[in-house]
Image (cartoon, rainbow, N blue to C red; front, side):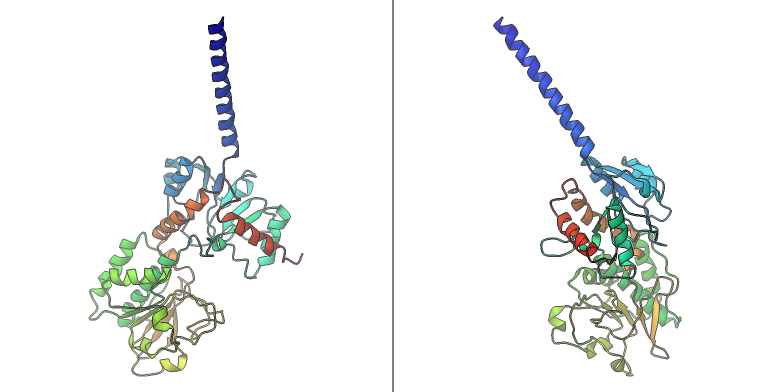
Length: 387
């Protein structure tokens, strides 16, 4: 009798554990995060916030991941399907399940319907850019929320993921390409740029042109120790070019800097958020001693009051990359493209994705990590809307 009682207790205990385990598993499945990658709609934007490798990391952690088909993405949709992601038609995020978190890089397509999901992307709305109130009003009316990638920051207010390295790398590469075209008296030096399949093909093209040139350019990188600057320096060294690296120590005395005129290419990678003397001025460029013929402004802020290169007032594009500053026998051209990492969409996406995915993996608990601060900023900005 005692043995029967003992066996019955064991049986009940086993059944209880099985039921509890099943219940916990069902709860886990029901509440785990669903991430939905929105197809980029900005023309020629081949980058993505989530690579196939990142997708596998999320799936292995128990996330549900849906990937929209995209004719632009540098990664094939089959690569996502191969790691186990669900596939959805381009633009179908508007009908995604309510709990899905919509992830992308660039702006939403222009529309007016309310936004009821949580979204993660670069919204460009918190500095009161054009249309900011209309966009944020869509979140308010739809009771959606925005985690702006630009404002996902750590405890030191440093962005947790950035494209800076590849911006500097691509900017320096275009600077060298344009300088080489200048040597062939081609005007404008660059026109209608397309992205490259990978950095190897970019380096190969530049090396082929360097082999036909009698001399090689001397490059000055300002802000060489930062994210963008390190990318610019890496490109120059990959091409075995003479590279001068400036950072705080070299610029703390304040400009203008006459030494810049003795370089062939200037790559500016400095982000400035206060008034400082300019690095160069239009007046100092008018001299026969100038060898400088190409400037790349990776920081690219011609509209701000802190622009350290106050010799231009508009950005350039992949379609028209070069702005002519000085014409004639000693030309000076300028590149100021604000989406330089798009030149190398594969490498820049892989790098950015690896920085971002470790934080996406914490989305199951939005009370932790970078999410509370980003949500607080969203609430602060939506409160400023004049309805």
